[in-house]
Length: 303
Image (cartoon, rainbow, N blue to C red; front, top):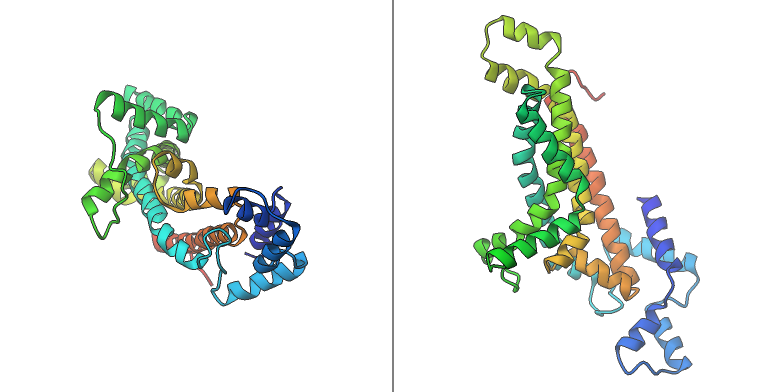
């Protein structure tokens, strides 16, 4: 967390541009005096030495105070509370959709190795890894508009207000976002299943007369699930921080659009808070995954 805070703080200061200039330019005709510039810098706190700005930010963040947005003049915590649910829902929906397809696809590909099913699964997974996510999103919009004359409603509906409209709006962004994850997870599942199916305990289970479905589901899949769980945690953290382009393409009012606006407008507090929130999410997900290892595989114990 300390390293992430130093990196994001340093990068935002290295980027060309002055938040005071951006704020004054956005608030009028672009003409302002040096006195105006100095006054805005003092108000924002960017006139202080960098080490003072960093230590002040870390102190306030330790109190869960992320400061006020330079551009919106509104608490950053309020912006995150407004935007984070949409991004989290999009990421979780994309992950669920991808694994609903990836797990059966990977298991089937491993069980039918070198068959036509395996080759079809390989084609799908290679395509998913090769095609850029933003291109898949644009293609989905084009197909929906050109051939079905249908697009999701533009006014965003929250899940707790209108679940049906909300799912309509997020299912296609989640599909575009999860296509790569589907391909990657299916390949990991296939490789892990092929490795497990050659183990001695699988041959023992078969020699005891157990049905193949029981051997696969109860013995093979559970032991092959550790790499899949690891990949799932990595993918969810990647989705939380990497949905920027998809949110912009599908006009989802999540953290992606807020991040783009913050970088363009040099809104230091907003960008720094968002990056730190993603970093905390990644660390917590890794902790949960490590704890799941011990539950899935009793041989793993934490002293």
